Amino acid sequence: MCLQHLRARLSPDEQLAAEKSFALYCKPVELYNIIQRRAVKNTAFIQRSLLYKIQARRKKRIQITISLSGSTNTHAQNIFPLYVLLARPTSNITLEGHSPIYRFSRVCLLTSFSEFGNKDKTEATFIIPDLKTLSTSCACNLSIILISCGQIGQIVGEDNCSGNYVEGSSLQKLEGKCSWGKIATNLLASSLEKCVTLSAGETVDLVSTVTMSPSFLEPKFLEQDNCLTFCSHKVDATGSYQLKVCISAEEAGARDLSLSPYSNYSYNDVPLSILPEIIRLRSGNVIFNYKYYNNTMQKTEVTEDFSCPFCLVRCGSFKGLGCHLNSSHDLFHFEFWVSEECQAVNVSLKADAWKTELLAEGVDPRHQTFSYRSRFKKRRRLVTKAEKFRHVRSHFMEPGSHEDAHAGSEDDYVQRENGLSVADASVDPSHAVHGSNLSPPTVLQFGKSRKLSVERSDPRNRQLLQKRQFFHSHRAQPMAMEQVFSDHDSEDEVDDDIADFEDRRMLDDFVDVTKDEKLIMHMWNSFVRKQRVLADGHIPWACEAFSRCHGQQLVQNPALLCWDKNPVLLGVGQGSSVELGAAL
Image 1 (spheres, rainbow, N blue to C red):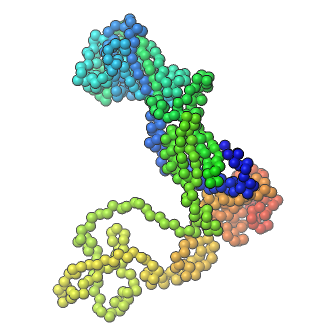
Image 2: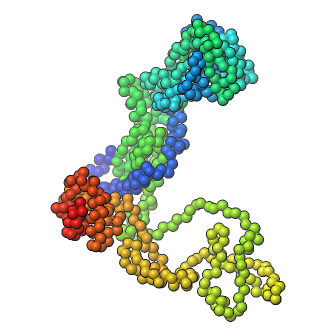
Image 3: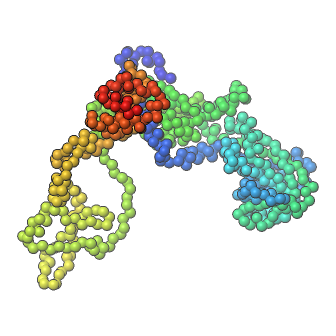
């Protein structure tokens, strides 16, 4: 969505300048694309472990409230106290006449119907995973278990009950006869999927019929890791009855929807058949406005599911999208705003982010010097004064001796344990040596200089270097000793991914070359650069190696043999094309 009325008033030169201004987005986007491709195999972090991803998943969880209505359960007698548990079977193996062994974490107690008494004692509230997670294998076995003691059970006292939450120690009183039933959450999820108003933040009310079967609660499992199981052999199985349970479900993050003006939208005119898809698309739609030409023009893009337009990562929420953009794409400046009509992000280039690369024309960025300082700090070990001097060996020389004259040209450095070089200890001249009585030095001074220049290097090492012949890393030409000892670094390595990308972009500028010709030219250029084909004498083995490397691709695509008719395509002489053809 460009500002067409402003574009129409621009002159041809101004329109060209505007297009060049918008083209500045290409270079940082290309950089992020390269980083994203490299991160596929070597990820810096796991996306699901990010805090905003976890918060977005928690907001999609479902909160269910379970209660009993006295009007629909008139025939039920002595069902209170009723314990409600959220449990999962520990294994799929069950014994005959026994239920699976369930492990639970939280227990709620219902003491009366929802129409009477205190509300805290008539409702049980749980948080279950979202509808998408409930359909997976790890969460499909999650069940809501109801245990009724009736006249056989005992009412939990105030010491072990706070509201409708029951401590685990009080469950030991459930040992013995009881009636139990369960509600599978996967069946509950299938019913909730049909309710289109759930994703809109509204509460859905359901009624589920549970069959309460008489059983015997095994006492030994209650004392082991919050586990329980039921046995039907020890009781009469003829006392089953039906219990109708009222279930209210809503998304856990539905309360936060009212905080955003973008969520205050009425779907009254939307058909129910497409309402869920419309809600999903609208809730995750984000408009990105790309500002350019001194922020006087813009182009617009819309993403779904809170996706990043640069790396297509789904961030789960608008807040998470802001965290991702500011932390992962800092070459842009972002402005976030939300209104009743849309949620949008204004994107603009940072003026100083690419200043050295965009303004310094004719300068190769790979030849520029940059500074790097690691923040990693090695933990220092406390060293006593005696340990500092343990590895220092004092050497006394006679004044005017040959050793004294030679000591000024060499570096007498002692290697310490932490890797730093320090000067030899200097002895106080006021202490003399008389026979065998050596007076220990009182002060030891260590040099703090770490400069290792060519002038201070060992002359013997310099003499050894002068006996060898060095060659340039790229030109493969002999180097003089002045070039070897100079500060210039010839190891300006080229990034293969960047070089391949630049090569493709330059080949795309040719209009009189076919697509297959561009491909074979790119394959040969990449091969020559990586294998360091530098002279005409390298062409025979290079052609043979190229045919072995890309032979299968050339056989599968005969159109790539276009070089046979036009040998200039490969950027080599006539003989190289013939030799390559012979190798194939």
